[in-house]
Length: 503
Image (cartoon, one colour):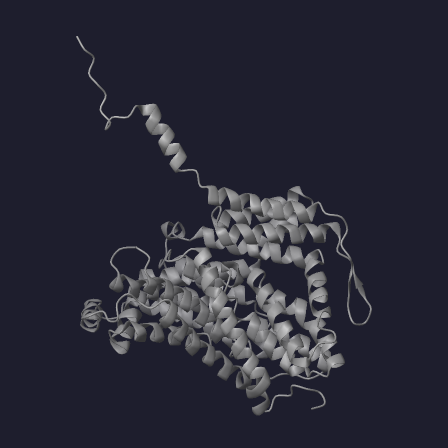
């Protein structure tokens, strides 16, 4: 009896296994894993580097630990940008490598993962969760859609203006956490599936960008303004008031918001010009929510209470000793005390994002504590020692812009501003323009997710990869630098800002 012949549609199990194995080898991922390791190795195992020398002749030695911090910085940047492993896992590698390669003590390296800034982000994300659970998010989203209408261009603009407006009175991290669920509700009306779209990318990346642009306008948008003004006062014995800062930064911040909107209308033009029937649908959905519930009222009161206390710290001296993280975490505790949230809600926390910021804080402090950041700043600014004043100012802004994508913007200001203010008098540059240009650049880290909490919160939407965010950030950063150049050369001098010491 003849054996039955095998048909082409029935490959043997071994052939099937091999073909699947070959198909799943991700050579691109492997390449970038080893590229990060290569960057780390070539810097960490290199010989001693030359000292940095500031204009006063002070020398800054790059220690073995400092060189290790730079090596880790390059590895981390490569792995974060190309997402070779989850971004939270890359953050864990930051602590591990610091400890194993003796760059910093393990206690210091991992302690930064629970830094107050990380807990602030945690509390901000909890606010976003509770807004969603209480129903406030849907109520706000439907109301806004009724106002802005059915054109997707106007939905973009409405969301961006709302985000930027809120940063005038509250920290941009808290704003992003509050607006994020609202955008999720809006996106659900645009696309029923979770499939990424151009509109989704533009909506969430644009939210992150406008949160940064809006946050530069007042001292309430982020902590970096208060730190920068403190340095400025130490160097110049002059204080910048709340309203003076807003006077110069308001036109810059809002011009940037409008440019961001145009940018997304060009490069992330929504697939649909309108969403027919959206306004009526939003009205109907809003009416179905019924009257405002006690839970919504309580949520609103707790959040407004926390935000108000944080905002009033800038105006009332007796509130200044209160830590902003403790204030916002109070809202988290209250949500559980009043049973608005339960223990099951804790499982919805995006720990990938929390770990991302823990790692960002750890690499930031690593660069700072080992002296690597100071060494970088002095070397960079020394290149502009004899430059034209305009090139010097824009060089500082570019340095701050690069650094603020990797480390917290407060640290970027703390590293660069003192050195820049020390060099400025040699070139006849007024300290005012140094301060405002640095603050503008520090507030808009558009390229890396770790640059600012709103970037990471937007990433949670799963509408874009970290590589897509990076690519969108390059032209947006260029746009910022061009706008900033126009303000430094023309607009700020017309508004009365001192640009040169001896015009």
